[in-house]
Length: 207
Length: 207
Image 1 (cartoon, helix red, strand yellow):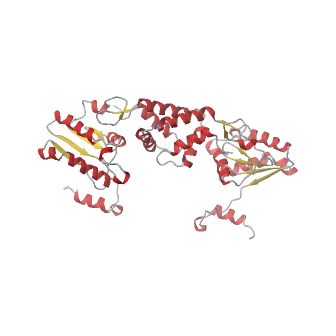
Image 2 (cartoon, rainbow over the protein chains, first blue to last red; image 1 turned 30 degrees about the horizontal axis):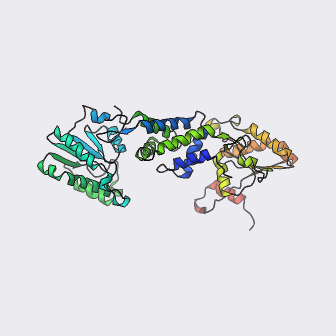
Image 3 (cartoon, rainbow over the protein chains, first blue to last red; image 1 turned 90 degrees about the horizontal axis):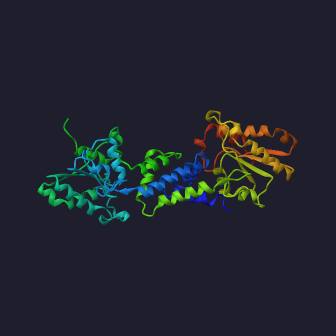
């Protein structure tokens, strides 16, 4: 004799697959819907189906999009001499929301991580090479801004990108840069970790 | 120019309505689906639709069920001289998972909370009265175990239930009990709040 109807168990099970959601949180979520009088469950279901059917990845930057080429890649306002390489689509949103960047993006789809069994072949390095060649056709110099996370894996992927284009870097047709590392706004020196302090010191500037 | 396709925004919006889920968590959830190769989004959508169509509330205890009368209410193994009043369905699961109770349940649908604008009329007190009358037909004495949460609101609802049946309590046909309050297993006396300590002292027993 099960306490819960099977259809409820199934939704709890599906919610539990989400990152950071355990069975108890999943149950709370489901009960939220069971209590909701205005068929919110149906609304979520419809929106999920809609997303499942309509969302694709941009052919050029591989960000999520509802068009074959996304709004950013097709915008004449974005500088195509700069391309920012990020791990995932969420990172593009972070940049766009802060409105600090006017170039293009490229979503790598992750980082090289031997521990998780992700090798360079699992990521979009080939597409990246192709995309950079395209940009080089209309620019004398293309800047690749490597914006992978400041983790070991992020660093490894950054080096990999550097090695990929070492010839072009020597020739001066490609410039590879990395986001600055240091103390974040509002940080407390007292609690900063060793590596952050080291980077902040290395990257110090004249004032 | 929006960064995200509208269909993705819509799912993020729906997820954000869930308890404890903000826009950032919602975005993470959606990206989990966008990355998932096996149409997990569709599976969640299907399970939600299935739940929305098939789940109802038991006519007797108002717990979620896929039948008009749930498995617990229709089971001949459950003692119908005891009925445990809980705030919501999740509380029934908590009891059932611990397998410590062999009576019936009644889901009140919340607690009286003037602060949140929930009065007695918003809860299932009328249905409770009807249900208790049914049980009294086949029992000389019915025990009502009030298992609302040990909060101010839970206490107020417990008093309300007590007042509802004061006549029957005097006659001895209804016995109203309340879950014991005290220190939970594994608690540290040092960190117990004043009220818990007070209740633990009041409810002390011989050993």
